[in-house]
Amino acid sequence: MRFRYDTRGRWYKGNTHLHTTASDGGKTHAEVAALYAGAGFSFLFSTDHFVASDLARNQSQSPLLWLDGVELDGRDGEGSLYHVACLGRTEGISRDMGFSNALESARAQGALLVLAHPFWTGNSFNDTQRWRFHGVEIYNHVCQWLNGKGDARPYWSAMLRATPDTLAFAVDDAHLRPEHPGWNGGWIVVNAKDLSADNIMEAIWSGNYYSSCGPEFYRLEFNGTQVSFSTSPVQFIRLVGPGSLGKRLGSFNDETITEATMSVPSQWDYAYIEIEDRQGRRAWTNTLFTDK
Image (cartoon, rainbow, N blue to C red; front, side):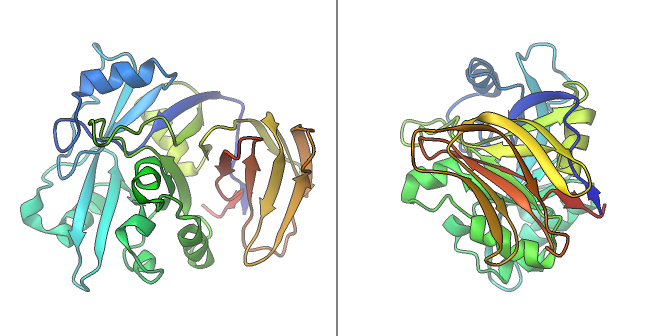
């Protein structure tokens, strides 16, 4: 096992799930890019429904970095409904293929497969195991706004029991229509050498990023027994392990924390860090260690 994080690069804020007029969104790619760039985002994935994007080739007119993707939705052979954000360039994807064939095609082409908003979709914990997803959306901003079903951390826990490397994502799932106005509520922040498609994708695959609804991580280090990190001012810090295992720092008074060091029990199957600010907004690392 090795420590997952190397935070010596630069931090880049991005979103891995959103929609444009290419499917059911209300704004064009250019309009979306201008909106997000104005809010400090560095990159976006284009994930329109069954529309495999081809934007990465031409970045000259964009104020931020576009990365290719597609969202697949439909029922598999067992009758379970899925939505999956597939991150990476794919070709030959169409709804006529059916969900299962399209998902296997995306996997064969090297896409990173993220189970989207499983609480909102109504997936069971068994559903999370059937397709060997690389990650899961633990927070979906639009689904939280729609009916309070944007928090999928229990699904992540179920997936971690089987695969401790499972990645976590906070996303907008922005549609940017009058009846679907939410955006800039959940994102990831990647640590990479530079803002290039290859390095951003490499950092995501390796899990060298955190998910957030507000708080920030600045530094993450491990000395063999203890993890040390610095953050924006937060009220609570939690080292989360399997089952009921965990450690915590913080209090209900007016004090905030910006630095911490915590020992990580070697017998835990996994551990990740959750921070929470005074407004109740949270951020999460991925699991701290990986065998990849």
